[in-house]
Length: 117
Image 1 (tube, helix red, strand yellow):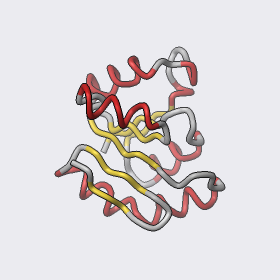
Image 2 (cartoon, helix red, strand yellow):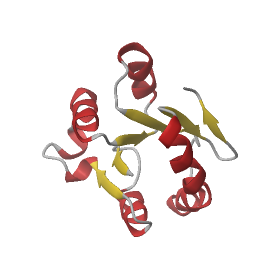
Image 3 (cartoon, one colour):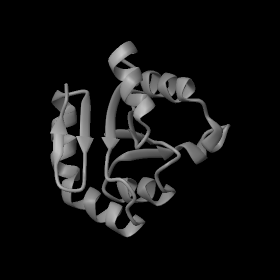
Image 4 (cartoon, helix red, strand yellow):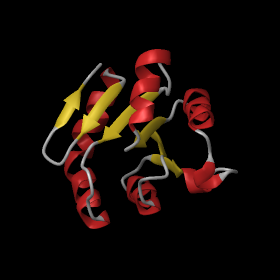
């Protein structure tokens, strides 16, 4: 699966996803790095069919209003250490990938994975 990880999440999440066999890029790898506007992130997501992983609720709004980005994984853990975040992804990634094959909007909290669409 192809992912685009937004600025609020650590670059090491990209490395973790790559190590698990996925195609992942972080906004730090883009031309404007973490200053890349949401509109450009959405455009890249659609063009490359990448699932945006973010904590930014603006993408939630954009998805409901404009059906952008291509697909969205909204992380709603609040403040969490990088180690806890990685553990959460390791624990839930199989389920998240399965759900994203059928759905376009998934939310992952500390204790659940929720399908919204």
